[in-house]
Length: 522
Image 1 (cartoon, rainbow, N blue to C red):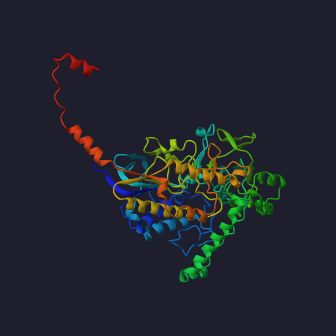
Image 2: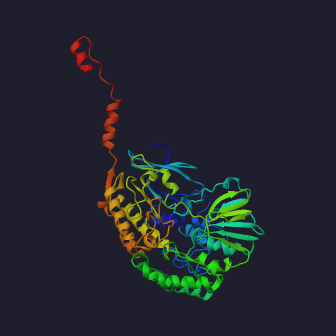
């Protein structure tokens, strides 16, 4: 109507969530959509994270779409290049390239209540959409702590998700800040090459062995020629993890045996009792994500690797000062300090029906109906939304469940017909959130005695799903219209008002009669 391009669906992001949404739209017969990607290629977090040693801690055959199985995974736990190549393959195989707009960062999205559509401003131009599917993901915007003196540090500084491959770490004194999933892969990858590596650890993680191996040519050939073997392998991996869920969500005390195995894993490589004490967590295993590595502890035992069991608090020139007073001189700092998960920056760029941003709506904590739709934001949904994360299984399973919900959401709009929107009822969002938080009370993530990135600034767990992936699949199988308000364009009313405004006003009555003037003044 105003010259801007209009599409039925705009998908934001081209990682697993965005590409999965695009595939599902095509499978539903919807081709009037675009995928808006801020970078110059697809891949999401598997494009951005290219640090040395980057790999997945979910088995390859479970960390892939059910509708796009890959019989040729090279390893049982795939490394970053293989996963990124898989996502490129998905984009090509399902004909997604014509829909993908690279270098198109979304700057703002505003709901137009008159036209029932989203106005989208991007770095490559503006457009409108009936429905927005936000698939930016929680691991897309790196978080770097504000450390006094960091701006004046004379050496090299970068985040693990923005690795500077042009900077050679060989022979350098390097500080690794953080001991999360990225750090435990980076440390063993760079330790043999640097002069000295100092790891700053605020809280030690629980680490289990990672039983990674090459998948043989015979196995790959079998999976290609007999697809049921590939499906059986995936089903077994899924079933084992489903059986583990109750220990995390209902009976955390049963995790003691797993703690013993993790301690034994540490003891095999760390012989120094003082170092072992620093590396032993004081919280229940599973409270933070259990990390998988068979190289991390051996790397920490190297003579050129030091552990500072205290957080970084200040930087003076080349000297890093920890909370316990330890001082370390370094040439480079690598931050492995995670991402903006509970305060996703995209939320500042979404303006809903009431004129407030999603960030304002979520200032007291993220919440969305079935992890997908937020009150006050019609025809907007998110993939990997609030309380859809997992602590022990594959997020691809959760993504596919949300794609089922997205598909039925669009079907419902078709059935309703005309220019129409669905707005999640605040009562339904509140009821869902209370249900999730009530289930969360017993979980290890809330009772395990740790402070993790699963918790928001208010201490609420707005990140993890407190159940099995099978339960979530059932909860998102279809849209319940009773949980939504159906919003339609009041076109006739708007046309009547416009017509009245176009009719010339009648001439004013003569002002001779004083009573008329008084009445008018009154």
